[in-house]
Image (cartoon, rainbow, N blue to C red; front, side):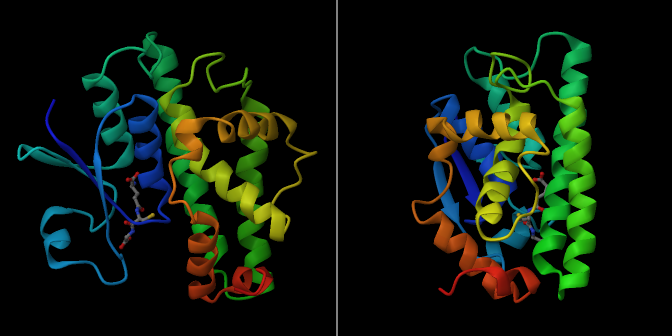
Amino acid sequence: MEHLELVSFKVCPFVQRSVITLRYKNVPFDITHIDLNHPPEWFAAISPFGKVPLLKVGDKAVLFESAVINEYLDEITPAPRLHPEDPLRRAINRAWIEFGSACLADLYMLSVAADEAQFEECRNGLLGKLRRLEAEIHPAPYFNGDKFSLADAAFAPLLMRLELLNQVHCVFDPAECPKLEAWSDALMAMPAVKGSVVHDFVKVYFDHLRGRGGYLASCLPAA
Ligand SMILES: N[C@@H](CCC(=O)N[C@@H](CS)C(=O)NCC(=O)O)C(=O)O
C-alpha cells in the first residue's frame, strides 16, 4: 500500500472522520497537523479548497473532501466494507453523511455566534436537524444496525462535540433525542473513536472556541 499522510487541523471534525476510518481499519498512516490560521505555503499549493483533511497517497495524489477520502480508504483496505453492499442503502448512507456535514456547518455557526440571540438562532437551526435525525435513525447500535460504517465515522465527531458542549451549555436535551444519545454512547465507547483526537482534545477544543470569542466562549469554564 502507498504511504498515507493525513493533513490535519487538531479540532477539525472532518479530519476526525478520516482518522476514525483509518484507525478502525488499522491502516498505518502519518498525521501532519497544521494551523489553519497560519497555513504553511505548501498547503495552499496542494489543497484546492484551502481545507483539511487532505490525504497524501504516496507521491501519486493528494485527495481532498472527507467523504471521498473515507470511501477511498474503505476501498483499498480489507473487509469489513464500511459502506453497505446494497446500492440503495449505500445511497441513503451517502445522503445522511452529507446531512452530517450540514450539522457540522450549523455547529460552526453556533460556535461563532456573537451574542445570545444569534446563538439561540443557530442552536434552533441545529436542533431542527437533530430532531430530524432522531426521527429518521434506528441505531442498533450503529447507523446500519450491528455493523459500524462510514456513516458512523461521519457522525461521531459531531456527536463527540455535542456531548462536550452539552456538559457546559445544553445544546440539545438528550431526553428529547434518546436514539441519538444511544447512538452517541455506542460510538464514544469505540477505541477507534476515542483515539481519533489528540490526547488533550477537550482543552484544545475549548481553547479554540475561546479564541473565536463568540457567545459560546463566554459559557465555557475559565481556562
Ligand atoms: N467538505 C469538506 C469540509 C472540510 C472543512 O470545512 N474543513 C475546515 C476545517 S474543520 C477547513 O479546512 N477550513 C478552512 C477554511 O475554510 O479556510 C470535507 O468534508 O472535507
